[in-house]
Image (cartoon, rainbow, N blue to C red):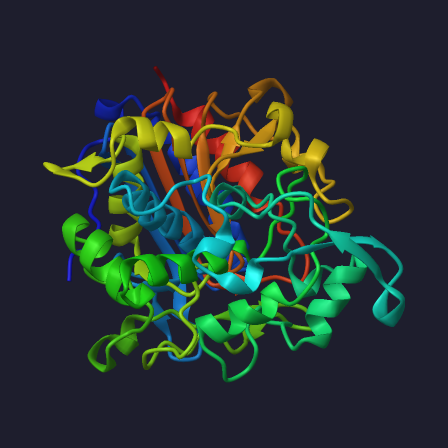
Length: 409
C-alpha cells in the first residue's frame, strides 16, 4: 500500500496558501451542512503534491474518518484508464482507432440507426458506415444509457434490462452482445452521446489481448505505475478502507445507498465504471498523462499518443453542447468543452463556466469524484468523495474556480 502525501509547501509550488484555505473552507461546508459525508482533495504542481486535505467521514455510522489511504469507487473515472489500455494495443499495432468494431465483435456487423417512432413502431435504417474504435473512445458511436429518458432508444435499453448498463447476472461479453442488438441513436461519428461505449471498448481489449480486462489493467497499467490499490475488487483485509456510498435522503441530508460491492471479483468487468482506487492511484494516473505517457522512468505511451488522447475529437471541432444528443447534454457546463479519447478537453476557456487553462482535460464519476490536468499551469487536481446526488451540487465549477485563484504564477 502506498499513500498520498504532501511533498512541498504551496508557496514553493506557486500556490497561494490563503486561497487554498478558502478552497478547503468552501468544500468543508458541504460536509458540515450534511450534504457530503467527507472528502479528499489534492492539488499538485509539477508533479509534487502541494496541498492535501481530508475532512469528514468515510463511514458516518462507524465514525471512521476520511484518510489519505481511503479507497473510493471512481465509477466513470474508469473510462480514461480503459482508453489508455486500448491505446497500449494501438501502439503495439494490435488495434487501430479506425478498425471497425465488427472486426473484433461480429455482433456489431450490421448496425441500424434510429429514424422515427418508438417501441414496436420504431423505424430504423442500416447505418451508412461501421462503428469504429475511435467512435467508442470519443462517445460518438450512437450508443446510449438507459437512464437518460430522453430518446426512444433509451427506452429500448431499459426494456433490455440495461438500467445499470449490465444485464443482471451477465458478464461483459454477454452484455455487450445485448448492446449490439439495439439500434443506434445516430450515424456513427456524427454526434456525441455519453454512453456504454467504454464497456464495448473493454470487451475489445479482452478479445485483442486474450486476457480478462482486470488482468490486462493490472499487468499493463497498475503494476508498472505503482497503482497498488487500483482494481475491480477490494481484498478482505482492506475492506475497512473502502468509503461508504451515500445518496440524497428524501427528507434532506444524506443516507447510505448500495454501491459497487467490490468484495469479490465481479462477473461483469466494467470498463465504463467498475474501478476502485486510492488517491495515490489516481495521482499516479494523472501524472502519467501530465508527463505525456512516462512516469518515474516507466513509459507506457508515446507523447504523441497522449496528445491524441487529450485533443478534441468531436465532429468539426465542436464542443459538447453543440454536438450533444439533446437534451441530455444541453447544459451550460458543456460550453467551450470538447471531448478527446475518453476525457473532456477545454477548447475555449473564454466560454467555460469555471476558469480553465486551454487544453485542460479530465473526467468525473457519478459518486462526485473528479480529476483534471491543466497543462498550461502544470496542475493535477483530484477530488474524492462518495455521494450519488439526485440533484446537482454545483461543486465542480467552484472547485476549478478556487484552484485557479490559488495559482500565483
